[in-house]
Length: 310
Ligand SMILES: [Zn+2]
Image (cartoon, rainbow, N blue to C red; front, side):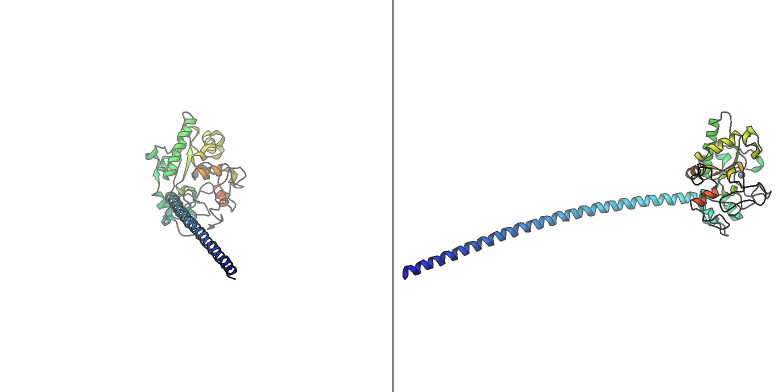
């Protein structure tokens, strides 16, 4: 019995030892595995934290760049508005909001201005004669006055005309006017004249005659040159024949589609180069010369060309 019992004990002891060894091994292996994965989690945490920091920095940089850019753009827009928009104090009551359009301002029989506007506008203009030495062909018109930006561009246009037409030069025949005239079909009454804008001059090369008459268009290479080239300097033929209307009779034909009622081959109006180019090339008029009225309606600057339509 004894040896038998001993053999049995040995078996039990070795089994216990085996279980202990295996259990210890399992615990050690588990510890190792846990330790490694813990390290992995830690390093993963570090990496993602660094990336988040970097991302934050990049986002902050991008945000401040964007803010800086937006501020610059806003300043440009504000500055441009300051330069081109007539002070609201000068905008008359009575529904004419188009005078706030700066160099795109519209004054006609349907969009009128009052004497307060006209007086204020006069004080915002520069003297072409003393600033640029421009000659006013009709002394009774007084000093030629024009918006400063328009004046600088007019001077460039006059220089270009003289350079391309040796021995010739352009003169003004009335720019800003405080008063209109009620002479009928070819004259605009006070409050309705494009000359009140401070962006307009009648122009002529007196070598070809000093009478403003559309019948002389063919004998006036100056007016033909202006029609072809003025847009490069931001000026437009304000009253092209295409938009004059059907007849040269009363009442003045200013219609809701953009007809002006006038045909004046010497009357040039500053609107700035982008608008002048689109008007001269007829972007919104099938490639044919546009009227300022029709253009402003097409680009949505005025909703309607009827009285008080903006
Ligand atoms: Zn005129």
